[in-house]
Image (cartoon, rainbow, N blue to C red):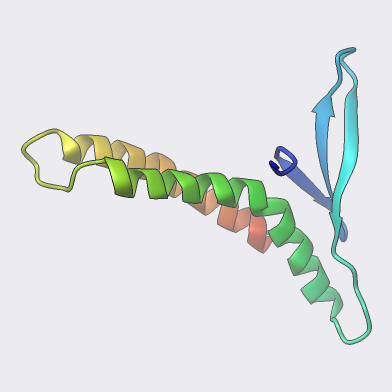
Length: 107
């Protein structure tokens, strides 16, 4: 079973996804609630909601990094691997940084 497609958005402690239906209307549905219970600080519950909302982007960035590690030749400078790996690395680093910022609430 696949997870709910991203991107996910956080509103307070609620995380939702949105999609466009066949009639051009934007629909929203709940993905998760970061519940605040006794003993859990408000800031911690908010951080949990941010991390949950960033999950699809974090997963995609991790999958990209894993793919490059398995498929792109080592950095030897003779076969073009350096250029390919450098280009992919820039894209992956950007995706990783964006996902990390989202998880930390710095977006």
